[in-house]
Image 1 (cartoon, one colour):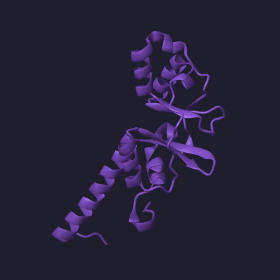
Image 2 (image 1 turned 45 degrees about the vertical axis):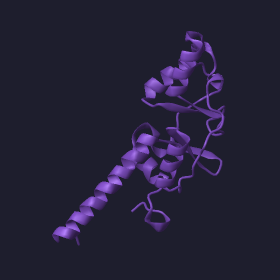
Image 3 (image 1 turned 120 degrees about the vertical axis):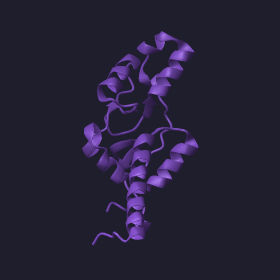
Length: 159
C-alpha cells in the first residue's frame, strides 16, 4: 500500500491523500510580475501558505510564502505590497520527485528550515507538499503501525 523501496512512504502518497484543491497535480502558481497584494489574495482564496513562482505554470522561478511577505513588510513597510513577488521570493528552490521518501523530505525540510517543497516529475510541476502534509502522513503511518502491533500483541490479528 503506497510504499516505495524498502517499505517507505513516498511523497506521491502524501500528494494523493491531500485531497482538496491540490489533488490531481494542481499547483497554485503566480507569475513573477504578480504583486505581493495579489499574492496575499491568492493565498487566502486557496487556504495555502505558499505559492510557486512560475511564468508558465511549469518552470519554477521561485517560491514565495507567508513568511516571505511578513519579513518584507517588517523590513520595507507597506510599500512592498505593490512590488512584484519576484522581489521577495526565494529563487533557490529545493524540489523532490514523487518517489522521494517521506522521511528524507521531512529531514530536508527540517535541515534547511523551509515548510514547502514543490514536487517535480520530469520537467513538470506536479504538486507541492508542506511540512504539515508530511507530518500528517507520518502520524497516520505511526497510527497504523501501532494498531497492527496492538493487534499482534493482543492476538486480534486481521486475516
